[in-house]
Image (cartoon, rainbow, N blue to C red; front, side, top):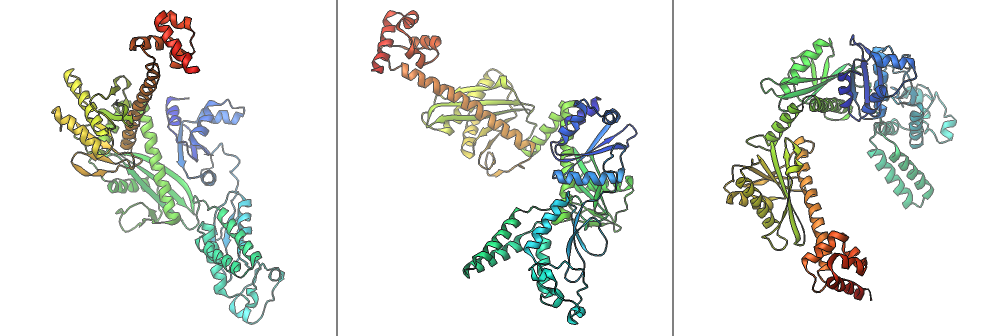
Length: 598
C-alpha cells in the first residue's frame, strides 16, 4: 500500500458513509457503503482476500473519496444512487435497475395510499425511498389501523357520488372504510386524516398524538374502556415509529448544494449535486486564504468554479447564507425540513474534510499543525502572542486538611510532564482556595525568576473570578502583571474570565482552543488530586503510628520503610520488630498493638 493511501485511511472518520475507489486514470472503479468508514476501508488493505476480483480491485486503488451521511440506511440509499450513475467496473450486484419502495399519496379526490416502486410525475406525493418492503408494509399497516381509508380505484367525483353510482363494499362493513363512495364520509374529514398521515410519514406526530389523546380521555370519561384501550394501542404504535431518510427526496429536484467552514488560513467547501431527487455527486476541497477573505467571498468563488468544472446547469442552488451570483441562478437559503437537512449534510462533509486535513498535517507536517493551533488559540483567547508555553494551577484539599496545589505545563499544545510540579501549601491555614492560589503562583514564578528560567505566555487558573484575582495579586507582587497573560476557567459553564472584566468569554464547545484549555484544567486537577490522596493516605498511616507512646518520627520512618504500611507493622512479630528498631522500642510497639487487640 502506498504512503498516500495509508495516510488517507488513517484520517477517515468513524461514521456512516459511502466510499469511492479511483484508479490511476481517476475513474471510479468501486462504490461501497459503511457503518464505520475507517474500519470498512481499512479492512480492504489489512485482510487477505480469497476472492480474486477483490484482490485485483485492491491493487488498482490509487485514491479514495468518501461522503459522510447520518445513518447506515442513508449510506445504502446513496450507494445505490452513485452505482446507478457511475456504473463502476467492480460493482456487480447493484448494476441492475433495482428500485427501492416508496409510499404514494395519490393525486385524486379521497386519495389512496399505497406502496409503489415507480415514481410517476402526476403530481402525486411520494415518500421514501425505504430500504425494505417490510418497513413500508409495517407503516401502511399502522396507517390503516389509525385511519380508515378507501382502497378502491373508483373515480369519486362529487357528481358520481351524488348520482349514486357506487355502493359500499365489504371494507365498509368491516370498519376499514367510512364509505366516501356513498357520501357517508365528507371530503373535509377525509382530507384531515390525509394531513395527519402525511405528518406521520414525515415523523411529525404532534397533531395525531394530540387528537388520539383527546379521544382516549373522552372514551375513558364515558366509561368506554375498550375503545380507550384501542386508542392507547394506536398511541403506542405512533410513539414507536421513526422518521424517514433524507438522502433521496422527490421534492428536491435538479439542485446544487454548497457550504463552507473556515479557520484563520483556509476555507473548506463542499458541493452536493442532486439530480431527479437523488444525490449523485459530492466534492470537497480546501481553499487557501490570500487576503483574509470572508466565507461569503470564498463560497462565491467556489460556486462559480465548481459549476464550470462539472458543467452544472442546475437552475437552483442551496446555500447556508446569502451569496451574489447574478440573476440567472435561483439562490435558496433553507430554514427547515429536508432542504435544510441537505445543507446540513453538506456542512458535515466540509467539517469532516477539515478534520481529515488536520489529521494528515499532524502526521506529515507536525510543525504546521502546531502553528495553526497556536494561531487559533491566540485569536480565540485574545492574546498578544501565541501561547507556546502554558501553565495551569489547581488546588486540592478536604475541608482545609492536607492542602496541596499542582502546576502542569503544556508546550506547543502538548503536556510537558517533566515540568509538572507539586506544592504543599505552607502559609495558608484552613480551607482557603484564594489564599492557596496566591501562594502557589507567587512561589512558582519567584523561583523561575530567581533561576532565570523562561516564563510562560499564558497562565490558567482553575476557578472563577476569586482564584483569578488571587493569581493576579501574586503576579503583581512579583512585578509580572501585564507581562504574562492570565485567565481563569470556571467548571460549571466553562466560562473564561479575564482580569478586570466581569463578563466571561464563552468559547465554541467544539473549538480546539476550548478542548486544549479543558485538557490543561483536567490534567492539573488529576495531577493535584493524586498528590493530595497520597499525602492524605500517608498522613493517616503516620497518625496511627504516632499514637504509640515514646516512638519518634525516625522510628516510624524505619518501620514504614520495612513494612510499607501500619497494618503490616501491627501484624509483625516481636522478633521482626526487634530486628529493625531494637529490643526496647520493639517492646513498646508490640505491647501497644497487643493491648489494642484485647
